[in-house]
Image (cartoon, rainbow, N blue to C red; front, side):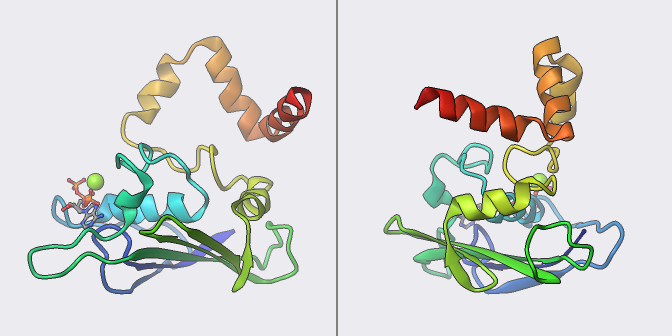
Length: 180
Ligand code: ATP
Ligand code: MG
């Protein structure tokens, strides 16, 4: 599976629409401190369903919306779209290319879409979870996270392995069902 393009519009420091095209293989993003490299990674996590403002290095979810600079007023919404090459069918959907989008309005509302069709956050999370992408998957390894794996208790380490093996999703569903 290959992430093809990421488009940010009003997301953090990316006030104007910015599209990044990723070629197959390794992509490096380089730039001075504060230029927005980590914001690109935050956008990836966000569009794949991240719900924790802290994981996105903010205090509240609204902090992902462009807050304005001395020369530019704040924006009312943040939008991120990610296009994934699905030629190998890794995502359980009948399209060879899948675009997932997420929009957050300053008024608080959210919109999600798969290939332009409005959907729920859960639909995106479900679509991605079987492929090993998405929320709570360790596909994005942040600074310090490697340390956390090395220092994990046996139970926590088991959690990582269960996730990698695809067991975690079923365990969560079971726990949810038992709570009802
Ligand atoms: P480093 O090399 O230090 O890790 P970086 O390239 O990863 O830097 P980021 O953390 O991605 O930099 O970007 C930080 C910049 O993004 C800061 O200048 C910050 O003001 C800006 N920023 C973050 N959130 C917003 C927002 N909501 N609106 C406008 N600018 C924002
Ligand atoms: Mg950074």
